[in-house]
Image (tube, rainbow, N blue to C red; front, side):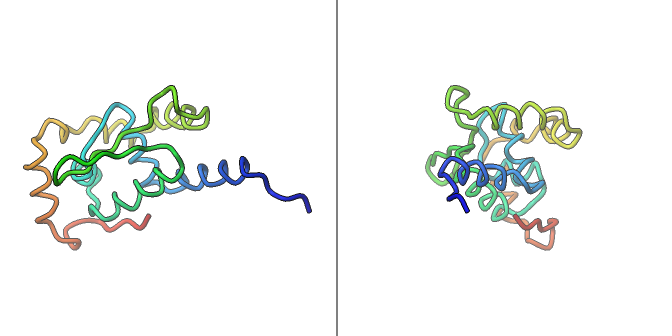
Length: 133
């Protein structure tokens, strides 16, 4: 059997990274611009821990970058010039999905980050639909 190349391994990992609905929604939600982890959790109505896990997988695949600002972690899609053709295609297709359009229509980005984060941190896991990543 022929050994598997590093390029093939990387492609398989990228495909795996978007093979879950939550990870796909997180990625598509970030396409228009940077969001705080709390904003993502509030928009998608999932626990912050699920968002963090999804971001970890998307970061491993090279699709997402994160930055920390004080207590908050912000995530965004890698710059377009660094994006792979696969990522560009995924984002183009995902941008047409009803769920993605609904997610993007929510006005959570307009709320101040401290307000959103305090709301997310106060809610219990029982208050939210737990979604395994």
